[in-house]
Image 1 (tube, rainbow, N blue to C red):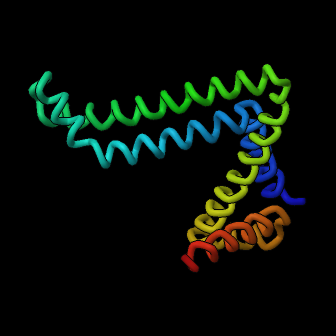
Image 2 (image 1 turned 120 degrees about the vertical axis):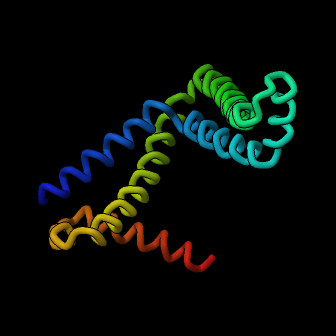
Length: 155
């Protein structure tokens, strides 16, 4: 194993352990709340801006605050719901399953993102391309990113 293998493994393991400590429920509800909040800010941002502009009177600031408040409110409510589900799972003695699934989910997402990082880095550095040919982990990450990019191309 090369130095690049060890670096990629340590980064991947760190991200997977982060998912273990957070748990799958918090990862899913946090990400889902953020996505829902961004969608709500796009759809209802003008209405929130109009409501805040009536109170504040500064158009550009009310535009920013209206959309930001929607994202924060939606994300906060999703995290609150996730916290309740996490507490319920812990009370039912299923906290271990939440943590295990969190590690699996974070590990899968980390492998995909590291694969994309390796693909982009290879495009900019011929030296890194030579290192990746010798690396076992980089080959696996390139395979994962190729599979994901192939799935995107078919859409």
